[in-house]
Amino acid sequence: MLARMVTGTASLQNLSGPISIAQYANAHAQMGLAWFCFFLAVLSLSLCIMNLLPIPILDGGHLLYYLIEMIKGSPVSERMLEAGQYVGLLFLAGLMGLAFYNDILRLVG
View 1 (tube, rainbow, N blue to C red):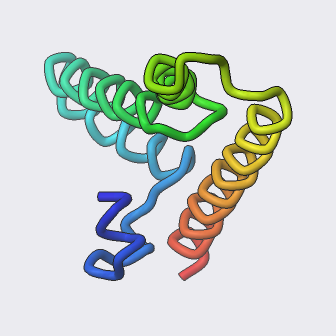
View 2 (cartoon, one colour):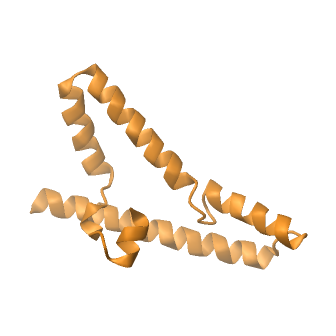
């Protein structure tokens, strides 16, 4: 879905943050324990997949650095590692900001 958002085939409004997650959790909890557990499982799986994205600050980024090290035969330089961490942090901060922005717009509008 993130790739679709970047290419423009999916709307950025599909991105939800913690406010929407809490609203969906409440709706599923009112439907019963089984629905709430299903929602928690889907949420957990989504977070797992997000964590494995090759963004340097996440676990997938560490795996990417290990893969580069395997191919290259030597570790990535400290400077490259730091630059990747900053880029990853900026990307995640932007993604979180967009998610909060979408949530607030849904509440207000």
